[in-house]
Image (cartoon, rainbow, N blue to C red; front, side, top):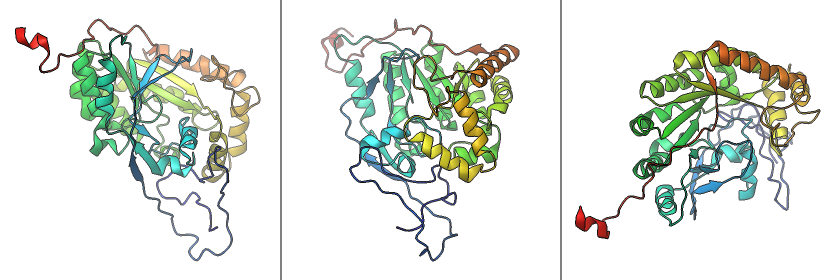
Length: 360
């Protein structure tokens, strides 16, 4: 095989593209010395494939997640965040959680129709639905496909409460819908800001919006009356954790009302992908960072236990928790919480031809 992809893969996060864990045969690129132009930047095109989904609402019963249903218009994410906890899911598609995850994307063109059908079912009990619980609903493809916008339009017609999270300023496009729903107490948003350092953001989240654009999105949402929060996620000990206070202050200044953070999570393939990236992007600090990560996870790369998987345990995790508490109070923010969703406005809209139309 030819030389493996490296940090010269233009605009991508992962360094390699190893086989998914469910494949019968594993593939791994290596340098055989035959590359004629080894220093040339590698370009990888993004492909989009239609997914014929049967349902659009995903359910979960995790006790440390503040919602029990979510909508993910896309599989894979072109933002390419190296730490993304959704990467391992690409293995279920027979693809790599590495470069495949950020270049071979799937979209659900019938998301709005599926959602309308599911919300209209007899016996459906409404509660807050979270948009973007897995991959970003406002990644670059959304600009043209407008699948997320279609989902918002359905939720608005049904009077259904929602929350949405993104790293993209494209969300500002939909302030007309989000603002109207927020005025009825039905919508909130969260913007994830991992760093204020443009160079670190470019390396770690190559195709996500710049930190400045994300802060601008917070301001625009706030101006539109949308309750918006800032997420410092993930907090990576030894890499970006020193920015926690600065990020929260910038978010509060932009108009964020609440804040949350998540300590770096490295389940399954992510631990190897992240280590490879560290060796390429921050070789001088790679060992130190991984040591601190393990100190926050009981000596492991990752601890999946509910209650600790989001924030970690031990002195390193305790210090992050204490700093967050002080910063939230200092900058006039509140801690993020699920809160009660207003389901009183939920109504299944009458369809043309329904008997009720005779009396309209």
